[in-house]
Image 1: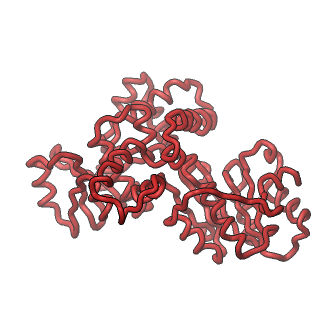
Image 2 (image 1 turned 90 degrees about the vertical axis):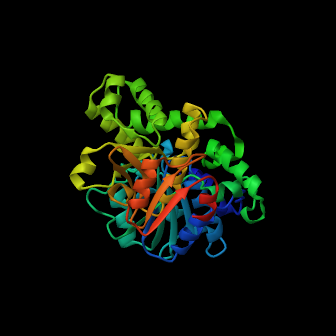
Image 3 (image 1 turned 30 degrees about the horizontal axis):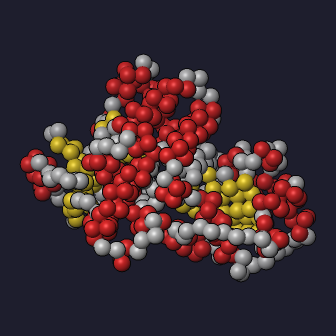
Length: 389
């Protein structure tokens, strides 16, 4: 085990180079939480940059604490399958003769350990640890026995927003002309925000990522026999971005029952491939009514559908822009407005937002928009919304 731990923690031997771009809005949060006792858990779609952020934090931490007091583990490695987190940590402490010193634990893909909630609680309660962990599965993070209640802070790492996209494309927003920003925004609409893809533009990378998430995190994890139906459903959902989704229609197309459609969609939500929002209405109407669907990353959608229907793409990006401000958006943070067959894209506590890319509201939409009583009303059009909102 010593050899494997040394491979994962090269800083113990003074050898740690990290050539990565910053994501300051997340890094600053993670850094602020270093002195806090609570466990910090990073969530989000696979390859969105959780591990890179952890490594960046380790790089920062090395300026302040001895290298031997930092332990990074990739818990999805087959080698660690038969060891508990406690087993590995004890072996690490023996290696470095650590007793009462504070240890910084970075546990990548924590949910590969079946009893991780209890193990994290024990480490939190009994030892002098600061713990950062990550997971790509919202379902696996469910804490049914509430071991981490009051002990954990969850931070969802999302694909690059437009400001971050500009950084990754080596553009300073404040020094770039409006014409260039508009061109870059069109490219952002096509590329999406998966960091590695933005750097390489390798379409095979995104295709393989979709294949990996669906095959490993959904089909294998849930023991699904008919694999093709899951992939077909994913393709159908990509075509329905920004639209109200009919489970009945999907079930007829795929020749499966509504319950199966619902269950499979829940797997897509749990792996951050999609989000859904409800209509703004009474609870019983919300539950019965169709929901609207958005991709976690628009680049993943475009690989499947091609770069078309820019209005839907733009609406999805507007949703991704505002959703981080409303953590529990499924339970009332973000809804859509729907009345007498007329729809307005998003309504929150303080904002009514209609996304229009190269279009104007029709007469009925404008009336509903103007008549709705709310503090702020915004028509999102083009790149300006992403530069100003």
